[in-house]
Length: 402
Image 1 (cartoon, rainbow, N blue to C red):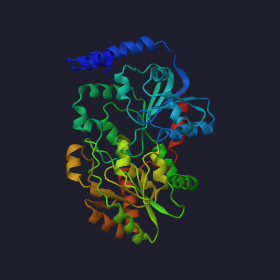
Image 2 (image 1 turned 60 degrees about the vertical axis):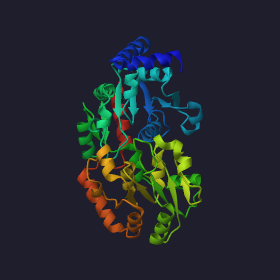
Image 3 (image 1 turned 135 degrees about the vertical axis):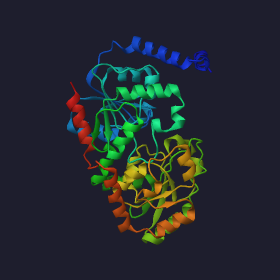
Image 4 (image 1 turned 120 degrees about the horizontal axis):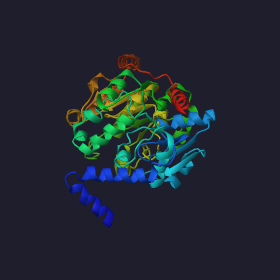
């Protein structure tokens, strides 16, 4: 460990040390970047602290490129050199967490992201006059409690301080339903200017995308006429995969029995567990690791069925109208640890707590009843999804470009 890192760790242990460190960071940022002029036509995008070209930011960037608007677009990624080929040439990459990235934030007219910039505010970044911060988040009709509603998060007083700062500096919140409006106002402290646009990443479910499906299947090594189920469990705080006790062979057999088609299973672990994919995904021609695909929307839009425990991704997938199932072995524990906003049994998805129930749910799946449950759920949650979210966000950016 370096002398500098040692000093930082010692400061953190002193009462009030973190606040002192944050104050030092803010003064350092101001000295370096405060005088740098804001460039109104520059947009910096960030996806999950350095992830690739995906989630809600991607369709917005693509829409601006289609419009041929005069914007300089920058994207903060963990490894610009390795990720360069995954981005359009017109988007410039910068390393996430670097001084260069902080300069881009200090000079960009727009900050567009899908997560809170708490870590950046903690490292001294401050929003300046003439900058617009658009928050698109990464949930979707999400059942899991968020931010202020999670006791494990609010124990960290420094995190709370910068979460509040982040919220106070956010100019627009992009929402996909009335339920999400309420989550924002309940859980994210000071919230203003909620925009009922839908989520840009969900536009694809309202568009023809057969070419994408073919490309994804080819990448995964799945034959064109073979269906696949996407397994997308969320993470637990202990980072264990022991909760994911799915009997893949039995699931595959049940799917084939129920549909009369050939099936494969694609596993996509949460990004926080990506390094465990190799040990978790069995070596089998029928079970495929899809964790390496950066943009989960590509998988969701290509899958013929989905399986999860509590991931909000299944609520995006619901818009495809394809079958989805819940397999959750720790519902009571998870509800106590993290908490749900509503009863998991009120979702459109059949719920199983063990493999026997899961197989029974697949074999008994009633598509007509499932479609009615989706309609009722979307109406009850007040969905704004119409397939035009990316256009609306792009228009919002253009309207605010001074």
